[in-house]
Picture 1 (cartoon, rainbow over the protein chains, first blue to last red):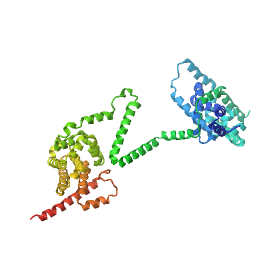
Picture 2 (cartoon, rainbow over the protein chains, first blue to last red):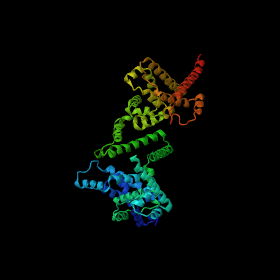
Picture 3 (cartoon, rainbow over the protein chains, first blue to last red):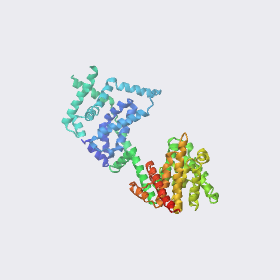
Picture 4 (cartoon, one colour):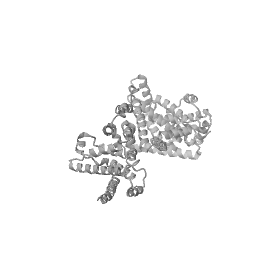
Length: 174
Length: 330
Protein backbone atom coordinates (compact mmCIF):
# COMPACT_ATOMS: atom_id res chain seq x y z
CA UNK A 1 0.00 0.00 0.00
CA UNK A 2 1.31 3.43 -0.96
CA UNK A 3 1.62 6.18 1.64
CA UNK A 4 -0.17 9.50 1.12
CA UNK A 5 3.16 11.18 0.34
CA UNK A 6 4.00 8.65 -2.37
CA UNK A 7 0.57 9.05 -3.98
CA UNK A 8 0.84 12.84 -3.93
CA UNK A 9 4.27 12.70 -5.60
CA UNK A 10 2.95 10.29 -8.23
CA UNK A 11 0.07 12.66 -9.05
CA UNK A 12 2.46 15.59 -9.32
CA UNK A 13 4.61 13.55 -11.70
CA UNK A 14 1.64 13.18 -14.03
CA UNK A 15 -0.24 10.09 -12.86
CA UNK A 16 -3.69 11.61 -12.57
CA UNK A 17 -5.31 8.24 -11.82
CA UNK A 18 -3.28 7.89 -8.63
CA UNK A 19 -5.46 10.60 -7.11
CA UNK A 20 -8.33 8.07 -7.02
CA UNK A 21 -6.45 6.26 -4.22
CA UNK A 22 -6.61 9.40 -2.08
CA UNK A 23 -10.28 9.99 -2.93
CA UNK A 24 -11.16 6.45 -1.89
CA UNK A 25 -9.06 6.68 1.25
CA UNK A 26 -10.48 9.98 2.49
CA UNK A 27 -14.02 9.94 1.08
CA UNK A 28 -15.75 9.17 4.38
CA UNK A 29 -13.45 11.45 6.41
CA UNK A 30 -14.26 14.33 4.10
CA UNK A 31 -17.97 13.56 4.35
CA UNK A 32 -17.70 13.45 8.14
CA UNK A 33 -16.14 16.93 8.28
CA UNK A 34 -18.73 18.30 5.86
CA UNK A 35 -21.63 16.74 7.80
CA UNK A 36 -20.30 18.28 10.99
CA UNK A 37 -20.53 21.75 9.44
CA UNK A 38 -23.51 21.45 7.12
CA UNK A 39 -25.71 18.64 8.38
CA UNK A 40 -27.43 18.63 5.00
CA UNK A 41 -26.86 15.45 3.03
CA UNK A 42 -27.15 16.84 -0.51
CA UNK A 43 -24.73 19.68 0.21
CA UNK A 44 -22.33 17.24 1.84
CA UNK A 45 -21.96 15.31 -1.37
CA UNK A 46 -21.26 18.46 -3.40
CA UNK A 47 -18.90 19.85 -0.75
CA UNK A 48 -16.92 16.63 -0.67
CA UNK A 49 -16.50 16.72 -4.44
CA UNK A 50 -15.52 20.37 -4.36
CA UNK A 51 -12.96 19.71 -1.62
CA UNK A 52 -11.27 16.93 -3.58
CA UNK A 53 -11.15 19.00 -6.77
CA UNK A 54 -9.71 21.97 -4.89
CA UNK A 55 -7.15 19.71 -3.26
CA UNK A 56 -6.14 18.36 -6.67
CA UNK A 57 -5.82 21.83 -8.17
CA UNK A 58 -3.77 23.11 -5.24
CA UNK A 59 -1.69 19.98 -4.81
CA UNK A 60 1.55 21.73 -5.86
CA UNK A 61 1.03 24.16 -2.95
CA UNK A 62 1.16 21.33 -0.40
CA UNK A 63 4.51 21.72 1.34
CA UNK A 64 4.53 18.39 3.20
CA UNK A 65 2.94 15.62 1.09
CA UNK A 66 2.74 13.38 4.18
CA UNK A 67 0.30 15.92 5.68
CA UNK A 68 -2.22 15.44 2.86
CA UNK A 69 -4.96 14.19 5.20
CA UNK A 70 -5.06 17.15 7.64
CA UNK A 71 -4.63 19.55 4.70
CA UNK A 72 -7.61 18.00 2.91
CA UNK A 73 -9.71 18.28 6.08
CA UNK A 74 -8.92 21.99 6.28
CA UNK A 75 -9.95 22.46 2.65
CA UNK A 76 -13.17 20.56 3.31
CA UNK A 77 -13.98 22.65 6.35
CA UNK A 78 -13.41 25.87 4.37
CA UNK A 79 -15.58 24.63 1.50
CA UNK A 80 -18.32 23.59 3.92
CA UNK A 81 -18.25 26.91 5.77
CA UNK A 82 -18.36 28.77 2.47
CA UNK A 83 -21.34 26.70 1.35
CA UNK A 84 -23.04 27.23 4.71
CA UNK A 85 -22.59 30.98 4.24
CA UNK A 86 -24.18 30.88 0.78
CA UNK A 87 -27.18 28.87 1.97
CA UNK A 88 -30.32 30.83 2.93
CA UNK A 89 -30.91 30.74 6.65
CA UNK A 90 -34.59 29.95 6.39
CA UNK A 91 -35.43 26.37 5.51
CA UNK A 92 -36.82 26.13 2.02
CA UNK A 93 -40.56 25.70 1.65
CA UNK A 94 -39.84 23.42 -1.26
CA UNK A 95 -41.11 19.93 -0.25
CA UNK A 96 -38.02 18.26 -1.74
CA UNK A 97 -35.73 20.47 0.34
CA UNK A 98 -37.77 19.72 3.44
CA UNK A 99 -37.48 16.03 2.71
CA UNK A 100 -33.74 16.18 2.43
CA UNK A 101 -33.48 18.01 5.77
CA UNK A 102 -35.75 15.39 7.29
CA UNK A 103 -33.49 12.72 5.81
CA UNK A 104 -30.41 13.81 7.73
CA UNK A 105 -32.18 13.74 11.01
CA UNK A 106 -33.07 10.13 10.27
CA UNK A 107 -29.52 9.22 9.36
CA UNK A 108 -27.58 10.97 12.11
CA UNK A 109 -29.35 10.84 15.42
CA UNK A 110 -28.30 13.01 18.36
CA UNK A 111 -25.92 10.38 19.75
CA UNK A 112 -24.14 9.96 16.44
CA UNK A 113 -23.91 13.67 15.94
CA UNK A 114 -22.26 14.16 19.33
CA UNK A 115 -19.87 11.26 18.62
CA UNK A 116 -18.91 12.84 15.31
CA UNK A 117 -18.36 16.20 17.00
CA UNK A 118 -16.18 14.48 19.61
CA UNK A 119 -14.10 12.73 16.90
CA UNK A 120 -13.53 16.04 15.16
CA UNK A 121 -12.34 17.55 18.44
CA UNK A 122 -9.54 14.98 18.76
CA UNK A 123 -5.90 16.03 18.19
CA UNK A 124 -4.97 15.95 14.51
CA UNK A 125 -2.86 12.77 14.56
CA UNK A 126 -5.48 10.80 16.52
CA UNK A 127 -8.40 12.14 14.50
CA UNK A 128 -6.75 11.04 11.27
CA UNK A 129 -6.19 7.53 12.57
CA UNK A 130 -9.77 7.20 13.90
CA UNK A 131 -11.27 8.45 10.65
CA UNK A 132 -9.26 6.09 8.46
CA UNK A 133 -9.77 3.16 10.79
CA UNK A 134 -13.52 3.44 11.42
CA UNK A 135 -14.98 5.69 8.74
CA UNK A 136 -12.93 4.34 5.83
CA UNK A 137 -12.96 0.84 7.30
CA UNK A 138 -9.24 0.25 6.90
CA UNK A 139 -7.19 -2.17 9.01
CA UNK A 140 -4.62 -0.86 11.49
CA UNK A 141 -1.83 -2.07 9.18
CA UNK A 142 -3.34 -0.23 6.18
CA UNK A 143 -3.75 2.96 8.22
CA UNK A 144 -0.13 2.73 9.35
CA UNK A 145 1.05 2.24 5.79
CA UNK A 146 -1.09 5.07 4.44
CA UNK A 147 0.16 7.52 7.02
CA UNK A 148 3.78 6.33 6.95
CA UNK A 149 3.66 5.46 10.65
CA UNK A 150 4.47 2.21 12.45
CA UNK A 151 1.67 -0.19 13.45
CA UNK A 152 2.64 0.32 17.11
CA UNK A 153 2.24 4.10 16.81
CA UNK A 154 -1.14 3.79 15.15
CA UNK A 155 -2.33 1.32 17.83
CA UNK A 156 -1.21 3.71 20.60
CA UNK A 157 -2.88 6.63 18.90
CA UNK A 158 -6.12 4.67 18.56
CA UNK A 159 -5.98 3.68 22.21
CA UNK A 160 -5.42 7.30 23.28
CA UNK A 161 -8.26 8.43 21.04
CA UNK A 162 -10.61 5.87 22.65
CA UNK A 163 -9.67 7.13 26.12
CA UNK A 164 -10.25 10.69 25.07
CA UNK A 165 -13.61 9.90 23.47
CA UNK A 166 -14.78 8.00 26.53
CA UNK A 167 -13.75 10.93 28.70
CA UNK A 168 -15.66 13.36 26.50
CA UNK A 169 -18.78 11.20 26.79
CA UNK A 170 -18.48 10.65 30.54
CA UNK A 171 -17.89 14.29 31.44
CA UNK A 172 -21.43 15.55 30.78
CA UNK A 173 -22.81 12.76 32.98
CA UNK A 174 -20.83 14.01 36.00
CA UNK B 1 -19.63 -6.56 25.73
CA UNK B 2 -16.89 -4.24 27.15
CA UNK B 3 -16.94 -0.44 26.98
CA UNK B 4 -14.07 -0.63 24.47
CA UNK B 5 -16.05 -2.90 22.14
CA UNK B 6 -19.08 -0.66 22.51
CA UNK B 7 -17.14 2.47 21.48
CA UNK B 8 -15.59 0.68 18.50
CA UNK B 9 -19.02 -0.53 17.46
CA UNK B 10 -20.44 2.98 17.75
CA UNK B 11 -17.61 4.41 15.65
CA UNK B 12 -18.00 1.75 12.97
CA UNK B 13 -21.72 2.39 12.97
CA UNK B 14 -21.09 6.12 12.55
CA UNK B 15 -18.77 5.38 9.62
CA UNK B 16 -21.45 3.28 7.96
CA UNK B 17 -24.06 6.01 8.52
CA UNK B 18 -21.82 8.62 6.90
CA UNK B 19 -21.67 6.18 4.06
CA UNK B 20 -19.70 5.98 0.90
CA UNK B 21 -21.07 6.53 -2.56
CA UNK B 22 -19.81 3.93 -5.01
CA UNK B 23 -19.89 6.43 -7.84
CA UNK B 24 -18.18 9.18 -5.80
CA UNK B 25 -14.61 8.31 -6.84
CA UNK B 26 -15.69 8.12 -10.44
CA UNK B 27 -17.41 11.53 -10.27
CA UNK B 28 -14.39 13.22 -8.71
CA UNK B 29 -11.99 11.62 -11.19
CA UNK B 30 -14.18 12.69 -14.14
CA UNK B 31 -13.99 16.28 -12.94
CA UNK B 32 -10.25 16.01 -12.41
CA UNK B 33 -9.70 14.61 -15.90
CA UNK B 34 -11.19 17.81 -17.29
CA UNK B 35 -8.91 20.09 -15.25
CA UNK B 36 -5.25 20.54 -16.24
CA UNK B 37 -2.55 18.50 -14.56
CA UNK B 38 -1.03 20.47 -11.69
CA UNK B 39 2.54 21.39 -12.52
CA UNK B 40 4.68 20.96 -9.42
CA UNK B 41 6.98 23.82 -10.39
CA UNK B 42 4.82 26.46 -12.07
CA UNK B 43 1.89 25.55 -9.87
CA UNK B 44 3.92 26.08 -6.73
CA UNK B 45 5.31 29.40 -7.96
CA UNK B 46 1.82 30.53 -8.89
CA UNK B 47 0.54 29.43 -5.50
CA UNK B 48 3.22 31.35 -3.60
CA UNK B 49 2.72 34.40 -5.81
CA UNK B 50 -1.06 34.35 -5.33
CA UNK B 51 -0.55 34.13 -1.56
CA UNK B 52 1.88 37.05 -1.72
CA UNK B 53 -0.31 39.24 -3.89
CA UNK B 54 -3.31 38.63 -1.68
CA UNK B 55 -1.59 40.32 1.21
CA UNK B 56 -2.41 43.97 1.66
CA UNK B 57 1.08 44.72 2.97
CA UNK B 58 2.65 43.28 -0.17
CA UNK B 59 0.43 45.50 -2.30
CA UNK B 60 1.44 48.54 -0.30
CA UNK B 61 5.11 47.61 -0.59
CA UNK B 62 4.75 47.24 -4.36
CA UNK B 63 3.04 50.65 -4.57
CA UNK B 64 5.80 52.25 -2.48
CA UNK B 65 8.49 50.74 -4.73
CA UNK B 66 6.65 52.01 -7.80
CA UNK B 67 6.44 55.53 -6.36
CA UNK B 68 10.15 55.48 -5.46
CA UNK B 69 11.03 54.35 -8.99
CA UNK B 70 8.83 57.09 -10.50
CA UNK B 71 10.42 59.71 -8.24
CA UNK B 72 13.87 58.42 -9.29
CA UNK B 73 12.95 58.72 -12.98
CA UNK B 74 11.53 62.20 -12.35
CA UNK B 75 14.72 63.27 -10.59
CA UNK B 76 16.78 62.02 -13.52
CA UNK B 77 14.73 64.32 -15.76
CA UNK B 78 15.26 67.27 -13.45
CA UNK B 79 11.84 67.32 -11.75
CA UNK B 80 11.51 67.87 -8.01
CA UNK B 81 10.11 65.22 -5.71
CA UNK B 82 7.07 67.44 -5.04
CA UNK B 83 6.31 67.67 -8.77
CA UNK B 84 6.57 63.93 -9.31
CA UNK B 85 4.51 63.29 -6.19
CA UNK B 86 1.80 65.64 -7.45
CA UNK B 87 1.69 63.76 -10.78
CA UNK B 88 1.58 60.38 -9.07
CA UNK B 89 -1.24 61.36 -6.70
CA UNK B 90 -3.21 62.87 -9.55
CA UNK B 91 -2.90 59.71 -11.64
CA UNK B 92 -3.76 57.58 -8.61
CA UNK B 93 -6.84 59.65 -7.77
CA UNK B 94 -8.06 59.20 -11.35
CA UNK B 95 -7.72 55.44 -11.05
CA UNK B 96 -9.29 55.38 -7.62
CA UNK B 97 -12.22 57.49 -8.73
CA UNK B 98 -12.91 55.11 -11.60
CA UNK B 99 -12.68 52.05 -9.38
CA UNK B 100 -14.69 53.40 -6.44
CA UNK B 101 -17.34 55.34 -8.30
CA UNK B 102 -17.87 53.13 -11.32
CA UNK B 103 -16.69 49.60 -10.69
CA UNK B 104 -16.92 49.02 -6.96
CA UNK B 105 -20.19 50.84 -6.43
CA UNK B 106 -21.65 48.98 -9.41
CA UNK B 107 -22.75 52.20 -11.13
CA UNK B 108 -22.63 51.45 -14.84
CA UNK B 109 -24.70 54.63 -15.34
CA UNK B 110 -21.53 56.60 -14.53
CA UNK B 111 -19.70 54.96 -17.42
CA UNK B 112 -18.74 57.44 -20.11
CA UNK B 113 -19.49 60.43 -17.87
CA UNK B 114 -16.62 62.72 -16.86
CA UNK B 115 -14.82 61.61 -13.73
CA UNK B 116 -14.18 63.96 -10.83
CA UNK B 117 -10.63 64.54 -12.09
CA UNK B 118 -11.95 65.38 -15.57
CA UNK B 119 -14.48 67.84 -14.15
CA UNK B 120 -11.72 69.53 -12.12
CA UNK B 121 -9.58 69.74 -15.26
CA UNK B 122 -12.44 71.41 -17.16
CA UNK B 123 -12.95 73.84 -14.28
CA UNK B 124 -9.24 74.65 -14.27
CA UNK B 125 -9.42 75.25 -18.01
CA UNK B 126 -12.17 77.82 -17.50
CA UNK B 127 -10.05 79.65 -14.92
CA UNK B 128 -7.15 80.30 -17.34
CA UNK B 129 -6.44 83.73 -18.79
CA UNK B 130 -7.54 83.60 -22.45
CA UNK B 131 -4.42 83.11 -24.63
CA UNK B 132 -5.25 86.12 -26.81
CA UNK B 133 -5.23 88.39 -23.74
CA UNK B 134 -2.25 86.83 -22.02
CA UNK B 135 0.41 88.90 -23.79
CA UNK B 136 -1.52 92.17 -23.77
CA UNK B 137 -2.39 92.15 -20.07
CA UNK B 138 -0.31 94.49 -17.88
CA UNK B 139 2.16 93.06 -15.37
CA UNK B 140 0.27 94.60 -12.45
CA UNK B 141 -2.96 92.99 -13.63
CA UNK B 142 -1.12 89.72 -13.98
CA UNK B 143 0.09 89.91 -10.37
CA UNK B 144 -3.48 90.63 -9.26
CA UNK B 145 -4.79 87.66 -11.25
CA UNK B 146 -2.11 85.36 -9.93
CA UNK B 147 -2.95 86.50 -6.39
CA UNK B 148 -6.70 86.13 -6.72
CA UNK B 149 -7.04 82.99 -8.81
CA UNK B 150 -8.74 80.14 -6.88
CA UNK B 151 -5.92 77.96 -8.16
CA UNK B 152 -3.43 80.00 -6.10
CA UNK B 153 -4.20 77.71 -3.16
CA UNK B 154 -1.68 75.30 -4.69
CA UNK B 155 1.00 77.74 -3.50
CA UNK B 156 -0.09 77.38 0.10
CA UNK B 157 -1.03 73.74 0.33
CA UNK B 158 2.32 72.24 -0.66
CA UNK B 159 4.72 71.60 2.23
CA UNK B 160 7.68 73.24 0.44
CA UNK B 161 6.99 76.60 -1.29
CA UNK B 162 8.95 75.48 -4.36
CA UNK B 163 6.60 72.52 -4.79
CA UNK B 164 3.61 74.86 -4.53
CA UNK B 165 5.05 77.19 -7.15
CA UNK B 166 5.79 74.42 -9.63
CA UNK B 167 2.25 73.03 -9.17
CA UNK B 168 0.72 76.49 -9.63
CA UNK B 169 2.82 77.02 -12.76
CA UNK B 170 1.41 73.86 -14.25
CA UNK B 171 -2.16 74.71 -13.29
CA UNK B 172 -2.35 78.40 -14.15
CA UNK B 173 -1.00 80.02 -17.31
CA UNK B 174 -0.69 83.48 -15.69
CA UNK B 175 2.25 82.41 -13.53
CA UNK B 176 4.65 81.55 -16.31
CA UNK B 177 3.64 84.68 -18.19
CA UNK B 178 4.28 86.85 -15.12
CA UNK B 179 7.66 85.31 -14.39
CA UNK B 180 8.74 85.82 -17.99
CA UNK B 181 8.05 89.59 -17.87
CA UNK B 182 11.23 91.73 -17.51
CA UNK B 183 9.47 94.10 -15.08
CA UNK B 184 8.04 91.31 -12.92
CA UNK B 185 10.48 91.86 -10.02
CA UNK B 186 9.91 95.61 -9.68
CA UNK B 187 6.13 95.31 -10.13
CA UNK B 188 5.97 92.57 -7.52
CA UNK B 189 8.05 94.64 -5.11
CA UNK B 190 5.86 97.73 -5.59
CA UNK B 191 2.61 95.87 -5.11
CA UNK B 192 3.98 93.92 -2.16
CA UNK B 193 5.10 97.14 -0.45
CA UNK B 194 1.82 98.86 -1.26
CA UNK B 195 -0.28 96.00 0.16
CA UNK B 196 1.94 95.82 3.24
CA UNK B 197 1.02 99.41 4.04
CA UNK B 198 -2.67 98.76 3.40
CA UNK B 199 -3.17 95.78 5.63
CA UNK B 200 -6.59 96.93 6.74
CA UNK B 201 -7.84 96.98 3.13
CA UNK B 202 -6.31 93.56 2.46
CA UNK B 203 -7.91 92.16 5.62
CA UNK B 204 -11.29 93.54 4.55
CA UNK B 205 -11.15 91.68 1.26
CA UNK B 206 -9.36 93.98 -1.17
CA UNK B 207 -6.96 91.12 -1.74
CA UNK B 208 -6.49 87.59 -0.47
CA UNK B 209 -4.91 87.37 2.99
CA UNK B 210 -2.56 84.89 1.38
CA UNK B 211 -1.37 87.47 -1.16
CA UNK B 212 1.82 88.10 0.82
CA UNK B 213 2.69 84.41 0.93
CA UNK B 214 1.95 84.08 -2.82
CA UNK B 215 4.05 87.11 -3.70
CA UNK B 216 6.86 85.94 -1.44
CA UNK B 217 6.96 82.57 -3.21
CA UNK B 218 6.98 84.38 -6.56
CA UNK B 219 9.82 86.60 -5.30
CA UNK B 220 11.81 83.53 -4.32
CA UNK B 221 11.48 81.98 -7.81
CA UNK B 222 14.62 81.59 -9.89
CA UNK B 223 13.29 84.02 -12.54
CA UNK B 224 12.77 86.87 -10.07
CA UNK B 225 16.03 86.23 -8.20
CA UNK B 226 17.84 86.44 -11.56
CA UNK B 227 16.21 89.82 -12.21
CA UNK B 228 17.29 91.15 -8.81
CA UNK B 229 21.03 91.41 -9.43
CA UNK B 230 21.55 94.99 -8.39
CA UNK B 231 22.75 95.19 -4.75
CA UNK B 232 20.48 98.08 -3.83
CA UNK B 233 17.44 96.28 -5.32
CA UNK B 234 18.35 93.15 -3.39
CA UNK B 235 18.48 95.18 -0.19
CA UNK B 236 15.13 96.79 -1.07
CA UNK B 237 13.56 93.39 -1.48
CA UNK B 238 14.92 92.15 1.83
CA UNK B 239 13.95 95.35 3.66
CA UNK B 240 10.46 95.24 2.17
CA UNK B 241 9.88 91.63 3.21
CA UNK B 242 11.07 92.25 6.77
CA UNK B 243 9.02 95.44 7.02
CA UNK B 244 5.94 93.66 5.71
CA UNK B 245 6.41 90.83 8.21
CA UNK B 246 6.77 93.28 11.10
CA UNK B 247 3.73 95.27 9.96
CA UNK B 248 1.64 92.15 9.80
CA UNK B 249 2.74 91.06 13.29
CA UNK B 250 1.88 94.53 14.60
CA UNK B 251 -1.48 94.51 12.81
CA UNK B 252 -2.31 91.10 14.26
CA UNK B 253 -1.57 92.31 17.78
CA UNK B 254 -4.11 95.12 17.32
CA UNK B 255 -6.91 92.77 16.23
CA UNK B 256 -9.11 90.63 18.47
CA UNK B 257 -8.03 87.62 16.38
CA UNK B 258 -4.89 87.44 14.20
CA UNK B 259 -5.62 87.96 10.50
CA UNK B 260 -2.21 87.18 8.99
CA UNK B 261 -1.32 84.02 10.86
CA UNK B 262 2.03 82.36 11.35
CA UNK B 263 1.20 79.60 8.86
CA UNK B 264 2.79 81.52 6.00
CA UNK B 265 6.02 82.26 7.90
CA UNK B 266 7.90 79.55 5.90
CA UNK B 267 7.03 81.40 2.66
CA UNK B 268 8.43 84.65 4.10
CA UNK B 269 11.54 82.84 5.32
CA UNK B 270 12.03 81.11 1.97
CA UNK B 271 12.03 84.43 0.13
CA UNK B 272 14.53 85.82 2.65
CA UNK B 273 16.71 82.70 2.39
CA UNK B 274 16.78 82.79 -1.42
CA UNK B 275 17.67 86.49 -1.39
CA UNK B 276 20.39 86.04 1.23
CA UNK B 277 21.76 83.24 -0.92
CA UNK B 278 22.08 85.59 -3.90
CA UNK B 279 23.79 88.41 -1.92
CA UNK B 280 27.18 88.25 -0.28
CA UNK B 281 26.16 87.20 3.23
CA UNK B 282 28.81 85.00 4.93
CA UNK B 283 26.57 84.38 7.99
CA UNK B 284 23.92 82.84 5.75
CA UNK B 285 26.48 80.67 3.94
CA UNK B 286 27.79 79.37 7.29
CA UNK B 287 24.24 78.77 8.53
CA UNK B 288 23.27 76.94 5.33
CA UNK B 289 26.46 74.81 5.44
CA UNK B 290 25.47 73.65 8.94
CA UNK B 291 22.21 72.24 7.61
CA UNK B 292 22.88 68.54 7.44
CA UNK B 293 19.69 67.71 5.57
CA UNK B 294 19.87 68.77 1.94
CA UNK B 295 16.98 70.06 -0.17
CA UNK B 296 16.12 73.03 2.07
CA UNK B 297 13.54 75.31 0.36
CA UNK B 298 13.22 72.84 -2.52
CA UNK B 299 12.13 69.58 -0.94
CA UNK B 300 11.99 70.49 2.71
CA UNK B 301 10.21 73.58 4.00
CA UNK B 302 11.98 75.76 6.55
CA UNK B 303 10.85 75.17 10.11
CA UNK B 304 9.50 77.97 12.31
CA UNK B 305 12.80 78.04 14.25
CA UNK B 306 14.76 78.31 11.00
CA UNK B 307 12.38 81.05 9.84
CA UNK B 308 13.14 83.10 12.96
CA UNK B 309 16.88 82.53 12.43
CA UNK B 310 16.61 83.70 8.82
CA UNK B 311 14.65 86.79 9.84
CA UNK B 312 17.25 87.84 12.42
CA UNK B 313 20.03 87.06 9.92
CA UNK B 314 18.41 89.32 7.32
CA UNK B 315 17.96 92.12 9.91
CA UNK B 316 21.63 91.85 10.81
CA UNK B 317 22.66 91.85 7.14
CA UNK B 318 20.60 94.98 6.42
CA UNK B 319 21.96 96.72 9.51
CA UNK B 320 25.51 96.06 8.34
CA UNK B 321 24.68 97.09 4.77
CA UNK B 322 23.13 100.39 5.89
CA UNK B 323 25.88 101.35 8.39
CA UNK B 324 28.67 102.01 5.80
CA UNK B 325 26.24 104.11 3.71
CA UNK B 326 25.40 106.26 6.73
CA UNK B 327 29.12 106.51 7.61
CA UNK B 328 29.95 107.72 4.09
CA UNK B 329 27.33 110.48 4.28
CA UNK B 330 28.84 113.96 4.89
